[in-house]
Image 1 (tube, helix red, strand yellow):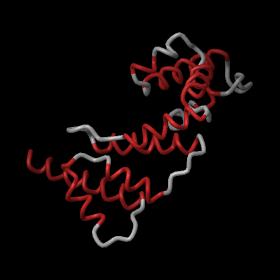
Image 2: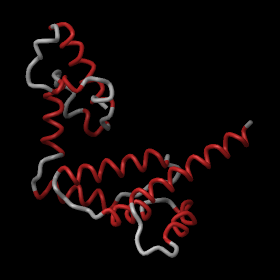
Image 3: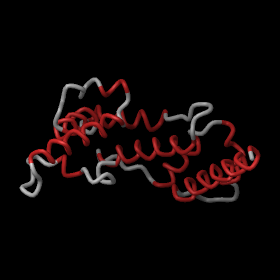
Image 4: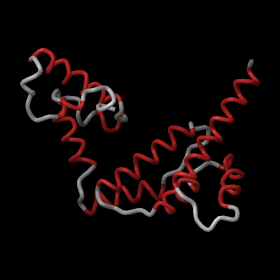
Length: 167
């Protein structure tokens, strides 16, 4: 998100010479606010007193991205127990799943693509059972690309059908 909003420079150790002091302070404030926006209530209190976005980022990295065995086990635990809540948004669910798999990759835990796809499909609520069955029928293997494309296509069709019914 910092990259999309052109705030990635805020994570540098020192202010670049090309940026004024006031612009640097504003960038730090915006980046810190952006980072906090994406944190859950259970996490934000750990960084609420930090001002510098680099300090916030480093603290979060230390807390969640260490490559220690316990960190790896925690991420594996999150991965294997990840389930969609009834009534949840499918897009958010897929994004959360992608975040967990990205976190696993950052701590060098390798999960095969086909296993990611199966875990994603198994994490869905029963309302997606027909779609999952259709995806797995007559297939030797499934990829994350196929799984996510199918889920997002299903979501978009459902959204379009819902908007037509409401008009």
